[in-house]
Length: 196
Image (cartoon, rainbow, N blue to C red):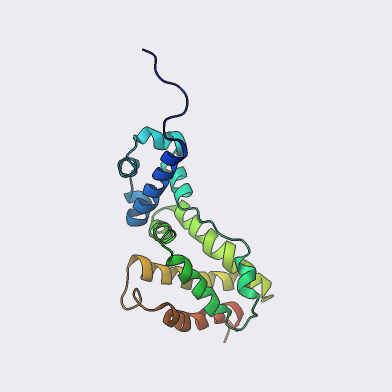
């Protein structure tokens, strides 16, 4: 009897099952806490299939935490004008964090960023480079990079407190209340006088 060659059975459904399990476990346990064996068991596949489809745990993590991010989002946030930009940005983030398909991914990225340099880089890329730096630059303000990182630190802290540590009453606060409370701070970072 000869060994079977070619693609492992299951194809794209197997890959999708692995990704769904990885998103859940990375979200719950972070990069370090989610093992390849645990992800394989959750997906009901042999661990060798994870290596076949993704190569390494790190590559699986990057695939599982990739967000379908619209690069036009910063421009859309700017379209109504500068006034209220901070509130729109906070609302935009909360809407993403509250989506059932994104929430575990965001939680996994934020949880892992403290321990894994690749996760930290991914968080910086998503929050600061893809959203905040283009926003600050488009506003034509000096120190666009500093403004973006200040706003990013506030947003990352908000995500950590609301999604990971689940600090109450922040974790269960209504979206609009958070938008009104945090939006003006983000607005000041992006458009205000930083030396005041």
